[in-house]
Image 1 (cartoon, rainbow, N blue to C red):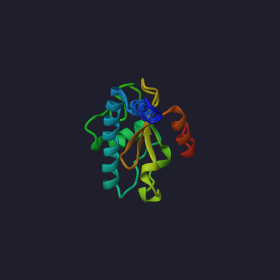
Image 2 (cartoon, helix red, strand yellow):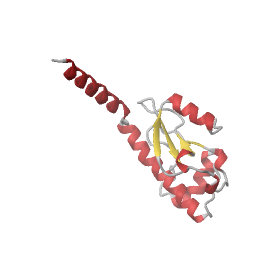
Image 3 (cartoon, rainbow, N blue to C red):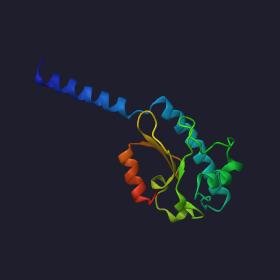
Image 4 (cartoon, one colour):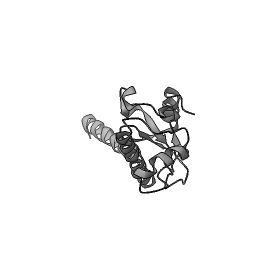
Length: 146
């Protein structure tokens, strides 16, 4: 093999392992789908309540506010870890227009990591991202979350 072939094989190997590592585990995928349902309920609440976020000082208050919009009464409980999602209390009764970019505004996030050592975070635009503990800590600091 010449140096070009070795370089191509090396890059392909690195890409393969990076992409394999970046994919979510089946458990995280299940939680992600569930979290998206909760975020859909938040979107429906926003539409009905003049673009104001629901009360979210605790998971229970947010769950109560979302109950008319969610088919599942455990909408704020991770189906994998069985722990309630943590909420962003700073959103309570604030207009969505107050935020420049809703894809940067966390609404809910996992209380404990999944088996793949990642936390899922649900954002106000309805997206869900898997994060390492370090990334979650930075997000929590930036958003003054506990």
